Length: 200
Image (cartoon, rainbow, N blue to C red):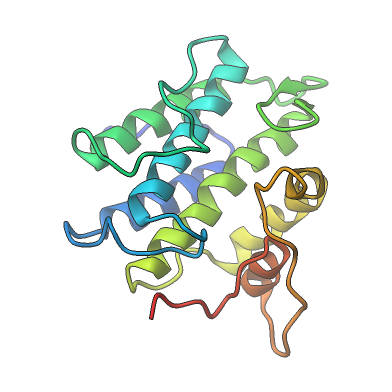
């Protein structure tokens, strides 16, 4: 990863970007083909989707080109160093959000309703990075990069945007709460993920 990491200045988004960097940084050469909690997708495909979505959020804000591929139909074939590809995507996203006025009435986003308050928009971008950081980490046998402190605001924005996206297939149906769930588990279940998922 680059030593010159660009930050957005939005705490939740920067924390989610750190989580995604950590998760991707821990993938070994043999790990890219492993299955993930995203049914039918490998680690490489989830990675491509996550990187593409960050570019998509940046493009919505800046008007610059979006990803050169469909993030919802990732090939799983990696062209180049994944960590460099991720850093490019996160840098684009962070730079775009750094230019957003926190007092603006609304900003453009690539997800419905396509305009949100600046906080909600940045948190929606963070939700995408954070949950896919979890997908990649658990798929490769590593600890969850999500913390309760990060999961709480992500659940707030998830409840703003996720329901319309379920019908489109972006999220699975929510799972029932489990006894002893913490904030991370509550977020994952709301997004249709089993907090105890393993690849085996």
